[in-house]
Image 1: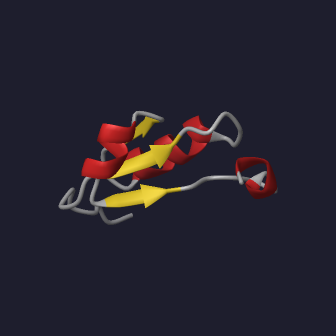
Image 2: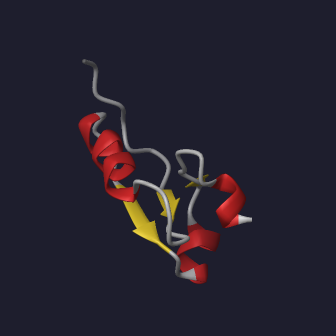
Image 3: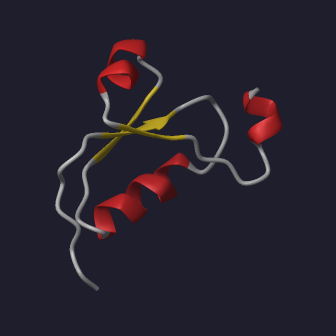
Length: 61
């Protein structure tokens, strides 16, 4: 599998549900660093946001 360059910062939104660690590990497997956070300043400074959820999107909203 090809490695993806870490050009953009990625923040995985921690909203209390979802399989956050699996998403984080998937980014790591692609060679990208991603941070799981609910910190507003980190979310605002990230280049990309990921809102994970396995059928839990309604709970997020």
